[in-house]
Image: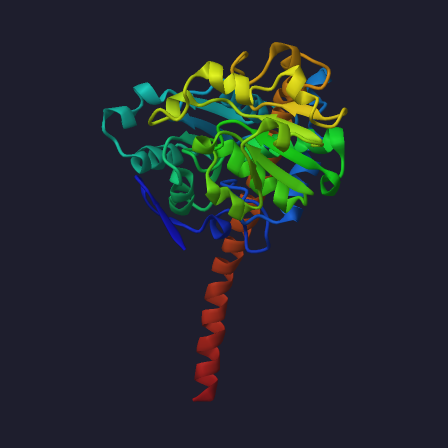
Length: 357
């Protein structure tokens, strides 16, 4: 199965991002991963989550490795947490200024990556406007280079989804007992797609998507979600409310009458939150548009875990990066073993042939 981006054909990411024995070597999408892999990411993050409180905020897991942040779209929070995560793993970090890079002067993306590979880079953290760009890159890079998807078009944002899953598990426990509502601009949200996939793989009881019809694609029913156009119906008795940013920069037409109308119908206020369970938690991937997606009293209230999500994001990204490097090392060792075995196999075959004569 292939998909197409501006960068060319892309292989099925399920086969690209895992080693032969199912270990992570790239992190491109939630789709196709097993519950065991997702739980391993969450469990690994557990060992990193309190590192910010320690006097020495580093472990040597990526010492000697070079991580390159390639953000073809603007991002402060995601890039900062990836940079901190790499530094806390003791990696050397290079933030490439795309606006001044060779790609802005006409060099192709693959030429840029191959030059960075030649400098000894071990991992690329990439955010790109084209859906599938990271999948294509992962299928083309050298076998010892890991690719981490920091967001591609409207397709996926797997590390954001996993930090959200970590937040939910840490504060609500067993997914099988949870009803989760995702609210807002579903149509343009790569985060929502990754969240729906992760929640279903981890066994959530029910996943609900709430928004206006113009921002609520019917195709997401196939991923295992129920669609609602009324907040009152969608929020009833849910355990988790995840608000999404209204992505005005991704809208191609007049999909909403006004921000004020959106807030009136779909903004999370204290009154609307009362439809959820009394102990429901509130989340938002950020950045927040107060008075558009969420009321300040809710964003700053006792049920909000928005700031917790930011700190958990560092731990999740540390987990993903360390697991990907481990998977690449394992894959490289296996390839070296196979290459070393090949001359011996050829010699044995030649000996057998001579004996048979």
